[in-house]
Length: 119
Image (cartoon, rainbow, N blue to C red; front, top):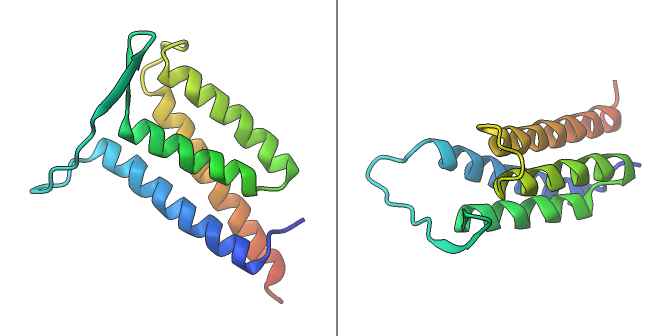
């Protein structure tokens, strides 16, 4: 089942915000100081504003997606939370999992647009 037009616009908007958060986590913007306060420490790892915003956006995306994609995104979300909390000690795993969610959501939207476009 495909998402409606308004649902796909919302997914595109959330995808845009998730890409912005992911890119700004890697690349510093010259001349712009973006605050990244540490809210609390859990298991010896700092939980920052970026982590909480990313969690909120991915949770929102998981709630919008249909069942097969929702299950896969939920598993990736759980793996991302565990990697942020340090249970998986693989360098860069949390960023890689966010990239997988971005690519999967882009694929889902591309397939939905391709199926709705007359050939």
